[in-house]
Image 1 (cartoon, rainbow, N blue to C red):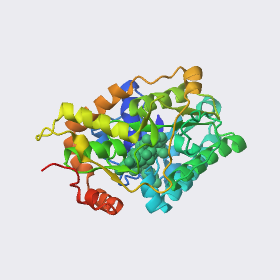
Image 2 (image 1 turned 30 degrees about the horizontal axis):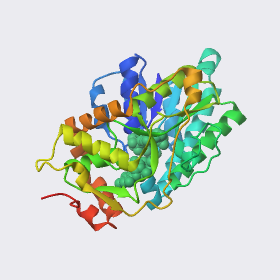
Image 3 (image 1 turned 180 degrees about the vertical axis):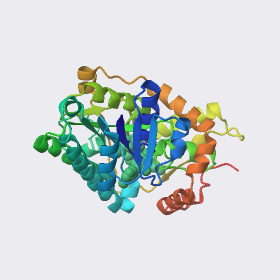
Length: 365
Ligand code: NAD
Ligand code: TYD
């Protein structure tokens, strides 16, 4: 079996679902169920003996040791993290704890476990670390996309904590020989994306008649990849990636935030038109910019394409259509994740902008 951390979050849950759809190999899923973790994401696996869920913290060394001994996984795929840049600005402590200390704990537990293996099991073991393109910092408009050798220049507490974890993974390979691989992926979107992030926030706010908050001028560029393509890349790296290597994963799909929001509005206009006939784009509101906001991310994915033959299956047009349709079909999921904690976050984070906090800006009555 494989051990997945953070498998109740956005990408982790998609990974577990895709894994079990494609393979008979069981998954042991270790997740703390923070505000971002949601067992409803895994509801399709209810009663499926191949999925074993354990609620727990990756910083809990005794627990991780026990799970490794008890289940003897052949690989560990590490998604668990605090993942939201804006939250890291408000409160970086939890990011250091989970992303840095948690990764350290997993590496030490994996090292002890792997050292005790022998023969084929030892040769086959793999620790895969899931990371982000944000560790590379911000690109100027004319700069070439990030390659794997781009210097690490993290700018937010989130990206700094992920950069630290990448360095730990690298060092555990270099010093102890732990069989690791790392992937640095661009922005994901798709089903089960928590509506604090741009794309699901825009879908959910649009349908609720709320403001669509664009930070600053909205011309920041991100490189968007459908989550299923990210999951396929990780599966491929586990299968054939070289030990100690990092692979950049991205869809060659750079878009400004304004372009993204307009595309989402256009799809909603087509699939769920507003009763007053106006476009959802009329709900767009510019709000104060994020402090230290990175201007542009872009991934050069040639290494994983050439070495491992991975290519995204979705275009942005096909992926975003699927995503919007998924949110329209899962309004109950949205209602359930909009817990007290979620509402508190929205009020606290957007409170500087009265219109957004009131949730009514730009909406025709
Ligand atoms: P997410 O916030 O949706 O999910 C994180 C999951 O980790 C949650 O289920 C949460 O309960 C769990 N978790 C948090 N702290 C934990 C702890 N201490 N112990 C155990 N579980 C804990 O995040 P996501 O968007 O699914 O991202 C998953 C991984 O992919 C992260 O490592 C992130 O840095 C990376 N990544 C994300 C993106 C993106 O666009 N979302 C892009 C590239 C890389
Ligand atoms: P986000 O989804 O938080 O991902 P990341 O910061 O990891 O790239 O944000 C994507 C982009 O959208 C980023 O440039 C910030 C911007 N953004 C807004 O303009 N408004 C919002 O309300 C949010 C959440 C993000």
